[in-house]
Amino acid sequence: MISSGQAAISAGTLLPAEGSTTPGTLVVHHLFKALAILGLTLPTTGCITAVVGSAAAVGVGAAEERGFEGAVDDTKIRTSINNLWLSEDLEVFRDITLTVNEGRVMLTGSVKKPETRIEAVRLAWQAPGVRQVLDEIQVEDKSGFSDYASDVWIANKLRTQLMFDSKVKNINYTIDVVNGVVYLMGIAQSQDELDRVIAYARDTSSVKRVVSHVVLKGDPNRQS
Image 1 (tube, rainbow, N blue to C red):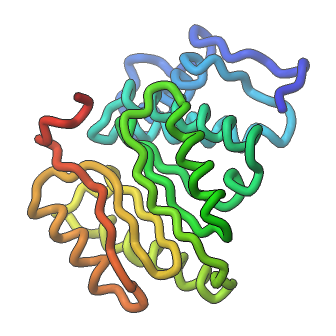
Image 2 (tube, one colour):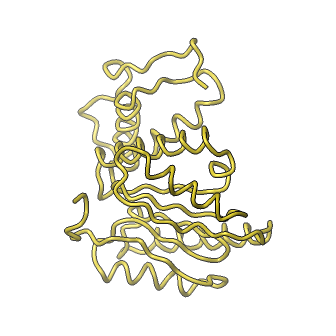
């Protein structure tokens, strides 16, 4: 995907000035630093979207509870699993959503065959750095466009509610919705905050079930 005509990123020339402290500059700084750490280059082809997308996740991750280094490690895990899926089973790569937080991998999506679900989990465990694989893949062949549209609406509504709730640090949460089932992953500042997030999800119309894989900030099992 990366052509020979790509220009390598130089941390010394492309990183923003260390003295800059504005939020926007800080995220950009981490984004370019992430590209340098991960050994990525800036493509001149359409692959730039995927490359910068991964680095952007790292840049935003610097503001999360897991921190910059944790975000880099999670991005390496994500990249490794995606490469395994892409090389071994295209159906897995296409139909399953991957979320990584502090080495905990959550798999969501809907597949037609149980064998596909098993293969996705097996390959996820092969990636270096994986501490846990949370298998939330649904096996059914009933999803249609209306289901997808409803899932998108639910996810967007929840993200908006969390964003405007001053008692919730929304950047630490990931929301996936599959066939009306809401999957939450991330790090909660407290049990009260987590309860608020789960309540938002349960009170949203068309939600069938809420599955939480959120851990508390003070959980001794984090990174153990």
